[in-house]
Every structure is written in structure tokens, then in C-alpha cells.
Image 1 (cartoon, rainbow, N blue to C red):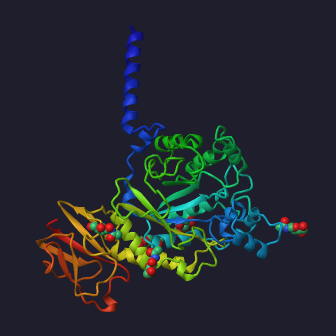
Image 2: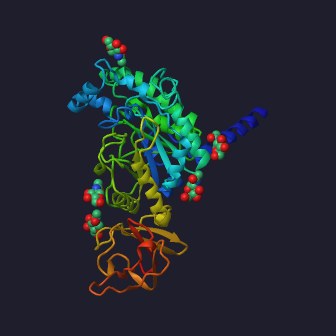
Image 3: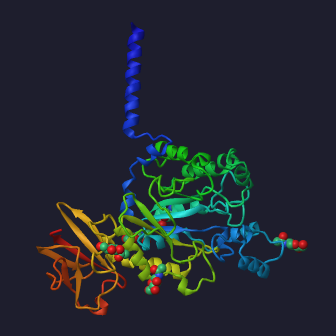
Length: 465
Ligand SMILES: *[C@@H]1O[C@H](CO)[C@@H](O)[C@H](O)[C@H]1NC(C)=O
Ligand SMILES: *[C@@H]1O[C@H](CO)[C@@H](O)[C@H](O)[C@H]1NC(C)=O
Ligand SMILES: *[C@@H]1O[C@H](CO)[C@@H](O)[C@H](O)[C@H]1NC(C)=O
Ligand SMILES: *[C@@H]1O[C@H](CO)[C@@H](O)[C@H](O)[C@H]1NC(C)=O
Ligand SMILES: *[C@@H]1O[C@H](CO)[C@@H](O)[C@H](O)[C@H]1NC(C)=O
């Protein structure tokens, strides 16, 4: 009798615990289960992130962060071979560059303050790129990491500490599953991935390690094109990340987890580098792009025209945010630990622009229309406030005409228009030579009263639709 009662209690407790686990959302290592996890809301609200590509490739800082592969890969790039011949002794190896990764001017507090001034709400640092060098003292790498050799610093830990201490910016980490020349991976590849020396012995343990140690709120995976998800065991990792890891409730992931996952599975979609579809997407997505158009890592000899202008950057922000994406704008710091003044200036100018126009970016949702259905270079975002919707028209070019015709917003009698950062209201009329839309009278603004220099945002309130 007592036994039966005990058993009934045990069963009840068991069901109750199962119920709690289900209610908490336990994820299985299947795409079906993992893809169903709602994206933590902070990420969509944040909109603006900074990507940082920093590693041993920052030492030669020539060509791109793919320098080692360009030099020793198949086929090698002739200009890189020439560059090495001309500038380094004949027996110089890529590993020798690590001793020159000095980072003597690295001041993580300064970086954190700059990122904060840029208006970014999250940062993603390369913990390890395809070269395999880890920017933290990895327990799986005795001499190819930033503590054992020249930096002699835990770069990941130092930046994480400064960002968390000084700002409200979310800290995230990039991690490359694959490494170009790791012999264990080459062996697994030769065995058609029937062995897992590299994934089980190096890459995945490091991924668990950085999550446990640094608690990143973004795990930005890459290097996924070199093996199936079964080989990487990335779904098992994601289930652990979502169920048990120290960041299980807030962490956000991307989509690069092995063959077939990119643009199909995971957290938000990155699809390809510089992904910018120009139309509204059903899944949350991110546009990762570089200020130096041709490289993610720092390149010493990039000419000025290789750098995106602020016009380019505000255009990319407008196109991306109006279509439901986030931007991840990339900088490559130098091997000295500095951020090139031109990159710093772009980031600070982005911050200047966002301080005026951030209302049209952060915490917004896509509107019914993403770009104007008649006038080019006008992109829309919106914000629900109680029962009505504020609509923001981001105008990339100041019109040369006295009025600006917008075809997509339909005004009501009570429609009010303003220009963000400018005090007077903007007059408007029903369009003269079009049957729908609204015509704004462009204000004549003294230069010193101009709210910003690059893209201007009109706020449209109390529209009919
Ligand atoms: C390259 O080889 C020369 C002689 O063979 C030696 O003196 C020099 O130290 C070597 N340099 C490196 C970077 O290994
Ligand atoms: C971070 O940026 C915000 C908004 O611009 C500003 O109010 C704050 O003082 C900044 N914090 C630091 C540490 O620079
Ligand atoms: C955090 O910042 C304060 C003030 O800027 C500084 O005194 C303190 O040492 C910092 N702590 C860490 C852990 O960086
Ligand atoms: C950047 O803007 C310039 C004009 O300012 C334009 O000629 C160029 O095509 C733009 N580049 C990109 C990548 O958008
Ligand atoms: C903007 O919208 C129109 C239709 O409303 C569409 O034809 C056009 O391709 C869109 N995109 C751009 C970049 O203008």
C-alpha cells in the first residue's frame, strides 16, 4: 500500500517535472526543434552591431584575412607569393607572424567607448578565424593562441570585460568551425568525415569553452562549408546552448553550422556575406558587411576609395532595417591594437547619425512597404504606438525639387509630418499630379541647423494607411 502510494507520488512528480521541462522549452538536436526556438527579443530591437576581424592575419595585413590561404592554399595567389619573397626571409612561416602580433596599444576601454559612441548595440569579435589562432588561451591549443605567444593576453576576455563594465552593449563571439590547414581536419576530410578527430578534439570543445568562459550573447558560427552538420555535431551544440548553457535564455545564433544549414536553419539568417535582399524576409536576418569593401581584416595599403562612404553606410542601414534585417558593420583593427582613424571616423559618424535618427532604426518593425513604390531611394520603417503606427521615411538623397512625392503613405486629414532632429513641422499637400500618396514641402534649412549630413528621416504620423 505504502509502496503504491509512493509510486503514485513518484509518477506525479515525474509528470510535473516533464511538464516544467516542456513549458521551459527543451530543445532536441534536430533542426525542427532548434528552428522553432523564438529569437530572444533583444536582438531584433538592437538592429546595429559591430563585427571585429582580428587575428594573426592582422600582422601581414595584406590582401585580406585570407592571407595564409592566399599564400599557401590551392591555387596560391601570385601577388602574395611575391609579397612574401620581397619582404620576408625565405624560411619565414605563417606561424612566425604570431610573434609580431604585438597589440601594444590595445586599450579595450577605448574600444568599448568607441563602439558605444557608434550607436552599436552589440559587438561580435573573432575568437578564432580560419587560421586557427585563438584570441583566448584555449585549452586545446598549447602555442597557437594569444596567451602563449606574442600578444600574451586574453584578447577575448579583455574586450568582454571592458564592454560589460562600461557599456550596455551585448558581447558576441565569432567562431570558425573549420581551419584551413589543421592536419586533424585534413585527415577527417581524407576519411570522408567518417572520423571526427578535429571536430570532437578541437573545434567543438573550443566552442563549448568560449561559451562557458565568456558567455557570449551571440555565437556567430562560420567555416561551415567544410563538412556535414553530423560531422560538426553542431545541432547537439545548439541544443546544449539553448537548454543548459550559461546564456541559454539570451543567446542568439546565426545559420552557419554545416552543409545545408546556411540560409535554412539555425537562429537568424546570414545567407551570404553582405546579404542585402532588398525585400522583406520572413525570417530574421543580418547583413554582415565591411567598411573596407574588399577585406574583413585590416589591409595596410587599402586606398581611400576602398572604404565605404557615410552615404553608402546610411544606404545599407536603411535598406537592411526596412527589410527586417540587422546590420553587422565590420572593422579590422591593426596588429598594434589600434583602430585606423578612418574606421573610427566612420563609426563615430554612424553614431552621430543614429543619435538624430535612431528613433527610425532601434526597436522598429518593417512597414507595409519597404521602399517607396514610386520615388527611388526612400525606405520605410515603422513603430506601433498604442493604436496607431508611426511611419519613418528614410530619404537617402535630398530632393532637388521643392516637394518630395511619396506614393506609399496615404494621408488622413490629421496627418502630421516632421523631420527628425529639426524643430518645425513639415507642410504637406495631397499630390498634384498623382492620384495617391502625399507630397512634402521640403524645408529650407540653414546649413548649421541641418539635423544630419547623410540621410534624412521624415516621421509621418496619423496616416490613413
Ligand atoms: C632562416 O634561416 C637562416 C639561415 O638558414 C637563419 O639564420 C634564420 O634565423 C632563419 N630565420 C627564421 C625566421 O627562422
Ligand atoms: C554610451 O553612449 C550613450 C548614448 O550615446 C551615452 O549616453 C553614454 O554616456 C555612453 N557611455 C560611455 C561609457 O561612453
Ligand atoms: C570598471 O570600470 C571602472 C571605472 O571606469 C574601473 O575603475 C574598474 O577598474 C573597471 N573594472 C574592470 C573589471 O574592468
Ligand atoms: C558608395 O557611394 C558612392 C557615391 O557616394 C557610389 O558611387 C558607390 O557606388 C557606392 N558604393 C557602394 C558599394 O554602395
Ligand atoms: C522598390 O519598390 C518597387 C515596387 O514598389 C520595386 O519595383 C523595386 O524593385 C524596389 N526596390 C528598389 C531597390 O528600389
